[in-house]
Amino acid sequence: MIIKNNTEIWKIDFKNLTTLLIYNSYNETYYVLYKMNNLILVRHGQSLWNKERRFTGFVDIELTEEGKLEAERAGKLIKELNIKFDAYFTSQLKRAISSLNIILEILGKPNVEINKAWELNERHYGGLTGLNKDETIKKYGDKQVQIWRRSFDVPPPPMESQHPYKNKINSNISSESLKNTFERVIPYYNEKIEPLISSKKNILIVFHGNSCRALLMKIFNISKKKIAKFEIPTGNPLLIRFKDDLKVQDYKYLDSKRAKKILFNV
Image 1: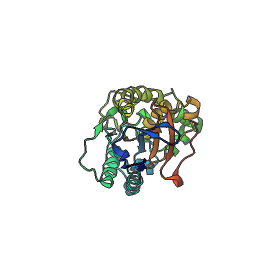
Image 2 (image 1 turned 120 degrees about the vertical axis):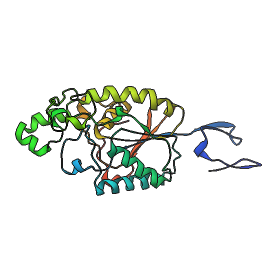
Image 3 (image 1 turned 30 degrees about the vertical axis):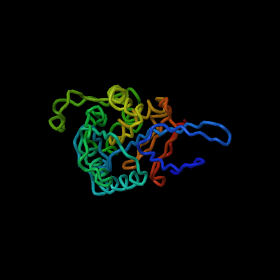
Image 4 (image 1 turned 135 degrees about the vertical axis):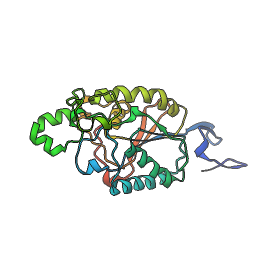
């Protein structure tokens, strides 16, 4: 950005600028310009079990070819913003890690430090893990499955010791509701991520549908009733810009053609 005064022309690089004070001599007024705090949230690209409509949870499933393409498209959309990121976060599950790595390749940052946290993992689907969603509806009824999937505080049946995927999950957790997921995501965000945003840092998080839903509840103060209806599209970056008080300034999905309806107002 070029700013002129009576005797000088300044070229301002906003990438590394936090606050700029400008004096307008014409009307003797000072203006304060602030650098926005940018947070981008991305749900990982389509996984094999997303495609097969199976409950995935803590099971470590690979991306499909379409999922890899979704991550590539996400990377290209993010690159167009020309944001200099200060930190990168993801879960400990490879569908999210792989999606972030693909995005980082597009951004030309393949070797940066990545913060991997189990707190950002998908919710644990307990005894539903591995089951096809349509077949589960036929067995238990749509109403019951919707309660397990979308209620805030009702977890699915626990994963028993004889469950076929029990030995593929390294966790003492047997099942989680969105409330349980919220109770691990938000403390991690409050401790590790929000202070960075407060310090004018730009953050990229690649994680999962339910861990993202939990975080959006905090950021936008979404009610339990509304979050039950809110879907997170795979591989579509959500850009959120904050004011200095960490209230949301504005937000948008970068791929507007694939954007889900946003059910909250700011």
